[in-house]
Image 1: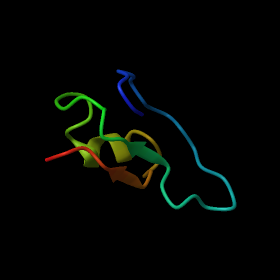
Image 2: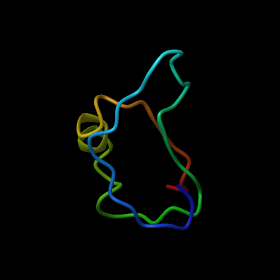
Image 3: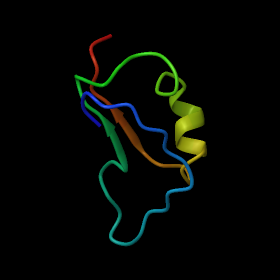
Image 4: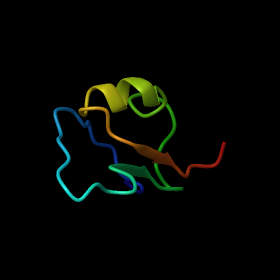
Length: 55
């Protein structure tokens, strides 16, 4: 994700395993739905998330 607004849910991840399933790049907005990373992960079959936004 970079400079876009999308809702993720119900994704699944196959073999081989990805290093990260969802990556929030520097241009991704802050706030809902991206700030609750635990919920985002849970809604996407426990996806691994890399948050590369500036904090």
